[in-house]
Image 1 (spheres, one colour):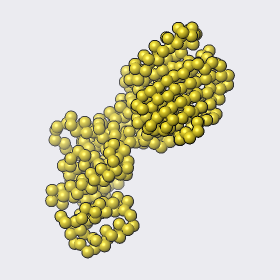
Image 2: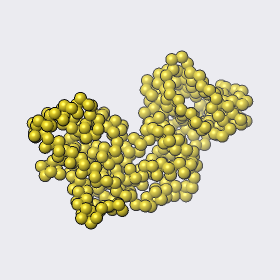
Image 3: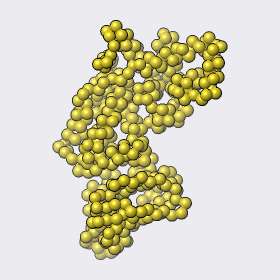
Image 4: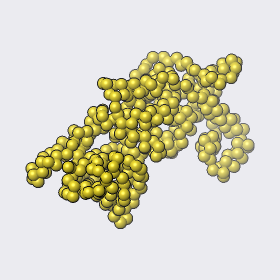
Length: 176
Length: 245
């Protein structure tokens, strides 16, 4: 865990709201995106993100400061998102808010289609493969960090990731 | 598909930027000479590019506000964790630990007849009170493969905490101290292997093996210290030391 996170955790435990605010500021976007990719639903991602931070706050006293805060938080994010997916059996329609710097209308359509295809392909992956793709490509974690979050060995991370990419390739190229 | 698994691993490692130079050369040579491998690698890279180009989704602008409302808006909670200890780990930890410690205190107080040294246990897994100049209150812990004892000694102008610890795994010892107390020194027994971080309010020791640590703080005024020991994300012990008046 970085010194900054460690200090912020301890300051939060000491009742410093600003410190907790800085932790939220640092990780809300990543937790939200993690949840969005796993759940495939904007509203669900909002609920999951809120729940993750509430649970993190409630359990902050049990957090071991010599461990990595992000691993602890992402693990909570993955578990909470998967629980949400299990709770929701409805068909998911995903709407994307394109960033303001998006290109022209034609490019936007291509981009939206591409995003939609990727999201659809993600949903066709098994839970283990989907999570590892999301942690690698959307949260930008290394093999080692993914292993820490999921509590699995690095070689298992690689194996899952490579299989997941192969499956994504098959789906996206129409071979799956 | 007749592509060797070794080359598929190399393709993925190259995509992730973790391939060695020698493997990169082998892969380049292989892909150049095998059309099936070239096609496969091209499709794999396109797939990864498509995933990476998906980009981030913008969270709602009021998400942070909602989180804060969820965290601090419950049951009229307007302060931090210390003031709402009921929700935190103390609630789960206190019943087990405090029961044992309280029983120990009662026995200790009866035996030693020290009614004026009853410590403030509110909100802590255990509280140890030690009168200035006296050092008889040793607290033992034994959980999750970490065991040992803690002995705080409050003297005029200083607090000394002696920690004996034996652990086969990494154990983290966190000492929190308040204004009026500052870290002065640490002595460890021979061969003790530990890492330490210290700032104005906290001292963190990461320890493995068997050792004794003597941590000394300068104390302008009697102020409590909080000690917590963790291993593998689990709490081994939590206690507060206070100098008795």
